[in-house]
Length: 137
Image 1 (cartoon, rainbow, N blue to C red):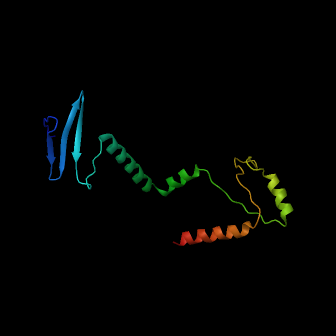
Image 2: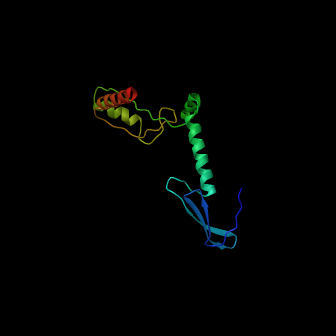
Image 3: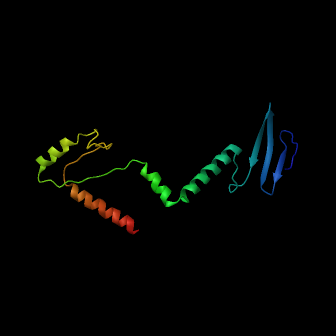
């Protein structure tokens, strides 16, 4: 490590295009001004450490084994859509009334968060087509 003494207003040149200037001293703190080309990243130490930690975590997530990803996914909530083909609107109303909106049902931790009537078969077919196209690409 090179150790230099500078007075306020004096500079240090690093390479041909980085200049560090001592702007002032207040108590135990020194104010530095740094001129560097846009391609050179300049970070405070704590910010650089945080960036390195985040990059390492992201890299580890990408390199994670598929079994570990599956284990993680198993702990996350899963949304399930079920489509019933019923003979008429009366039968649909009776079924919907058995699963009250916002309540737990069927002896599970599942909670009804939305219901609809109408032609859900067409919506399901559309969703299936979209899923098939995204799998193909």
